[in-house]
Length: 211
Image (tube, rainbow, N blue to C red; front, side, top):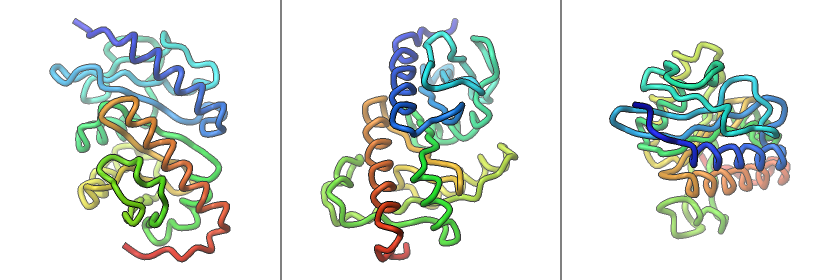
């Protein structure tokens, strides 16, 4: 039996529209998912090619641990494998992916370094487990890849190498973050997008310590 996920999908659709309004998911960019059950595994996720500014709960599809559609019409996001990887390795209940201007620019600028370090900002204290602005948050940056199986492998490797990371960037593409639940994932998204915009607006001139 497919577990009921209607409440999650209402909230994810609302978040999708919020991200559109903020300029974080224009066009058909971005994708959002939530784990409905762990046993059997079921994830609800946005289908590919949808305008996030007009997202509705009925448009979501359910996939299993292999990304196979079990309920709903349409194709799941092309990046479903990345959501599944984050859900598995981070035990995330919700995974969010945005394509903001700042995440795109910052990821490209710092891509050759393999990541960037965010440090000294009060907003860091909104990340799970962080209690001081002196925290050093390493945000890995991976090269984008249209081969999703290969990219999912790269994501698994980077998340294993950086178990404390709250998100990662795909170079020239956008941000992935997650949380135990929707409230935590939304908070992480807002904080990381804020800090990426701060970094971008600073003109990339603030010294960036290496990991």
